Length: 121
View 1 (tube, rainbow, N blue to C red):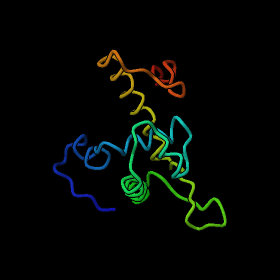
View 2: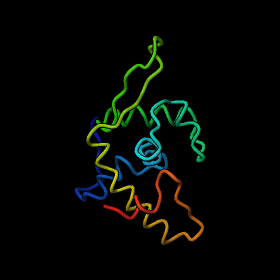
View 3: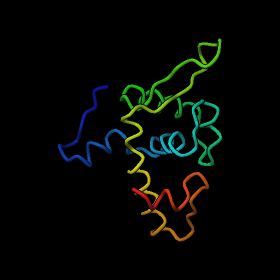
View 4: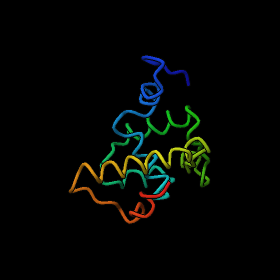
């Protein structure tokens, strides 16, 4: 997938790919909650809509961060898996979680992303 970048800054380039309000939450759900199916992503408390989720999954696949495979006889039912590049975002999300815990006193880590995993790396 060709992406137009605003500059050559690596932070700006990364945000051009992952900087919307949903993409990292989809990756979070895969990394820390083991979600693999469309319906599972819809159960997240943030309430992503079906059209936005479909768009994010398609773009993550085009970027090479996830792959999809049919999981039943219905060719429209897919399992989504992180690629090595997608898995490499784990320490990034842990760093974001650590930062969020310091900045937002009301924030709580879900059981799947407990303080021991957020504080490692």
